[in-house]
Length: 587
Image (cartoon, rainbow, N blue to C red):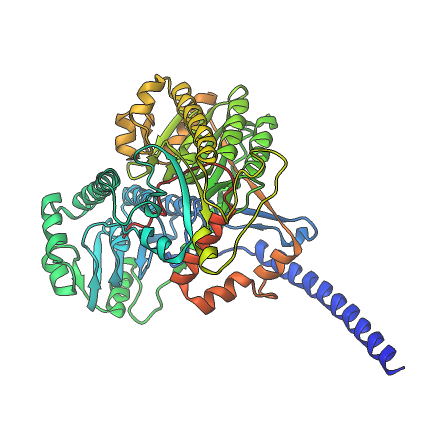
């Protein structure tokens, strides 16, 4: 009897918990819905605070909750929301200037350049831009160097030393651990797999890294040189000797204008905006102002649209989500844009190192189908390499930033093998099969020559297909494509010179070219894809359930978690890969 009572009380508790959760979610939905509709107010004589202390993606994303539409999200903190806000601030009489304030910018070099270009345009309005930091990282300084006056804390520091990239090599580790990677690759520069084949960097890999790092550094130096009136040669001397490492040296080197504390910085902004010293400075964060700007831009009543489809992350075979590019989400986005008569042209914004060869081909096909109906223009972000270039190569026009990393036209296959490990542990795997090639791969056995030959055949076939797609899309001979392929990585500037892209510029230029191709006088932008969420994801995002990834990050720390995340990403990759040569981290 007691047992039955306990069971009934448990069931009753579960039912009550579900009811409470349902009404709780409903109330949260009402709160979210009402907050989304709240108007952001901008006070007179305000300063726009460009504080970028959050990860910046090209696309903030639109998310729909199928079962709970009142929780739908349309964020406005993406790269181009920020750029729209900067552009709008130039004409907003309530905004007197911009403060680039104590950042640790989490953005790529091309993203920073895009924001920097928007700030240069803003300066044409005659309004001020000032910047302050306790510590300037190199990325922070690249963005802040556009300011009229740059401040640094008296005890502050500056990182201005040039660029480098670091690679880990695992050949000896594989031999010691007993787990090795079975590698088949095509392209002498396709160095994604090099760390599993050698203990040191190849000459080819060192060459391509050196070329593109120096290309990026050259662009950064030229931009800073124009803003600070310091020659590129002098900037190299400053970097070589670390002549900006503290406040005094940074001012002597003309990298900064004033050594001051933050309260003095605020006091100077009050003077610039005509506010009395005993009054508070009116300011608005760029994230809030971007919402305000988006509301203002909604007044555009044009019947014409240009769809901007964002392809951001690794390319995977599957549906795809906010962090990955799948043929499912991309196919649905292109189909929607094709069938909407109001959409007159499409801009595909790519920020991807590549991934699945099959998914890249399927997305390529969607672009082919779409081109028959309306123009497709590609805008490249920080990286559009390997599979990221595959899905770009057949567009009507390709536009890259000077600092974009692209190309990497090559193919590889990689399979883990644990034969050494299981032998050491005393484990033996035996197979029984009906046919000669039934066992195409086993984790417990090394690849034999016949298996390796079949994999290489597939890789060669995909390389031939890849280079033929590029040749067709770029109106080149296939042999000419192969001459600049081999997995070689190029900057946007070099890609323009060798014919892989058509023009240098950002999303604004791509939109202009799309407008011209569609022959329309005005338009508004439709952003895609629209992502779907289920109940579990909703609960995680609302903080009601802590995601296992969040727990792991807390326990392992940021760097260890990122390594684990990369291993998990490798496990998800299926089939032959068109992938950027390595995990890119420029320091």
